[in-house]
Image 1: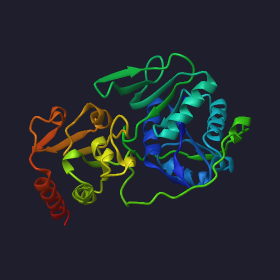
Image 2: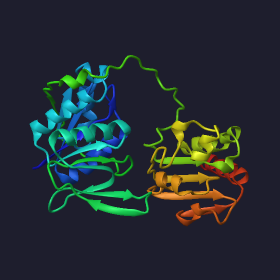
Image 3: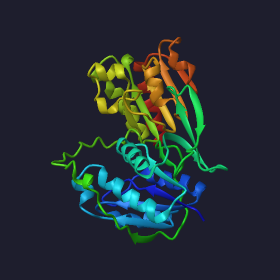
Length: 320
């Protein structure tokens, strides 16, 4: 059976959800071969095998932590040369897209980024993308070389499918460029206790209508009741009401959760581009003519200061 290389995003052996989603997509194309790099790579084999990885290629060299990006590109290139896959799948994080682009250039192949679905085609894998600020859906395939495809988180379900998960050491020869940019320090990001925005199954966002940083407590309370991540529109972020790291939109982060709740957000194209591929969209806005209502599944015309607390109270009551 044809094999598919899957780049595994993990932290000290703890596999992140998007990597498991990639294994689901990889099984549509062939037999998944996972590539785990850095400290704890060997510890990923169990969970990867439980989710369909036939083989797990590991390399725990210090270079992956000491230098930026290029050592990982070297390793993926080595994996491609060893496996000769029908495709390479990488998660659409900022680092993932840089790795994928560099790899595609190295191996002389085409690149597709931000896919929301991948399926087998007669002439190779076919990727579905949401383009032009989510106004159109396209289907594309790479016409030269081994397709390198980055996939947005939440584009596929995580499915437990038992496979061998055989661990093999990946032999990597690092290029001269690998040591070009050294990491000199790291600062741990303060944890909010909420899911990562781009990976969350539920996102609750606030916009200009929240009318102040202090009022984002309402958005956070609803998010916490749902186990959701918190997002913000560009207007709210530019006003200093919420951190830029939480901005959803064309100039912020792109999310594709199962449920997206927009509170006090008008629905400008800049914001819509970052959340329009969400599976179910709910909007709360007192302006019934707000553009956001054009794309929602459910709309509530009302003052968020009345609606959001009631919604939070109801969710908490149903939880128990």
